[in-house]
Image (cartoon, rainbow, N blue to C red; front, side, top):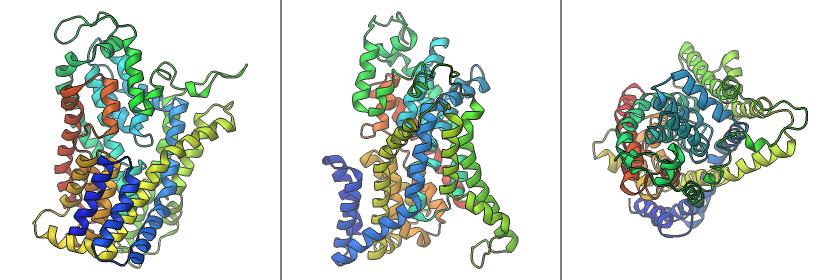
Length: 498
């Protein structure tokens, strides 16, 4: 137990008190855990390399493909087309539902930070037409993205959790989508409750950028006339987060990255059905694989997997529904369906290179999380922790949930929190009497708690929304904690069902 406590403390101290990142912290924590547990030095190194390699062998390719798909959705204007389709579909008066649903859909393949920057201008345009409600829309959009970013693969965190715990990826997609749909009303309800209360707290420059000069705040006083303030706010947000640097570029043209069409070429247009195709096809392939395999196992009476020989159709679906193949299909569709014909090979290569660069650290963090988990297994720390936690008489599913929550509060990153919780929980799953899928849900749901100052996404949302100080905590920290609390009864119910 001392080895485990010191290992987790190492992660927290390095991330919070040094200039080093979570990848370094997880590797050092693996070393500390192994040495304190008394394992030979060579055994510790062997466990680290084994855990790192095994984890990336199943997850690294998928993360790279998922981020590449998200980048093409971004630069082609497909993400923006999906957002506008949601607004039209749900109609007037349901804009918070439209923004929350849009955020949830777009954030499946697109990182929250860049996705929010892309979609925030739509929230502003809706609020400008209504002359009210910007905070409500902005919070619903941001937290809708949080739901699927934390719960639904192929976002990197849930993918890493599935790989570390050995959870069925298709099952996690289905369960994560169910959780996200059931938690969306919590997002909308909290945004509608807190939004009007915070409209008067909007920073003057953001209020002016959204509503125009002379806009009136919640106290009835007119906003100051500051023509350059909005640009300064965007610039300030850009310094805090690189994704914000594009905030005032793609607002009017979401596909500005494509450049000017050549002479004689048709202007680029993006419809919602076309935009949805590269996202929907991989998800359907992965889900079809899971459903077909489950039905086939049930027909053969081999639900436990022992002695199972797949029938021809489930075997074929197992190939095309493998996450690597499914996301390859999605990426090919994105490049050849979403991008205009005049897009050059070098442009596509540059975008995919940018995506690979952004995915690199996440892949390394995921592998390091697997290394820590392997050290915990090899040293027997997991078994000792299982016995200790079992004596607390907690429901087994709460163990990964609470570990993820504590790590999230300590260091801010939801991805690091769920990967760390999965690494610590992996050796405990059988002893706690829960399935790997249930443990994965616990890790993912627990990592949503109380986004605040040590979370980079906190700054993206609050800067673009125009909230500061306690208003930012009441709005953004409050709504993320609300969905965290809402996930708890769903997780306990899933413990009964699964």
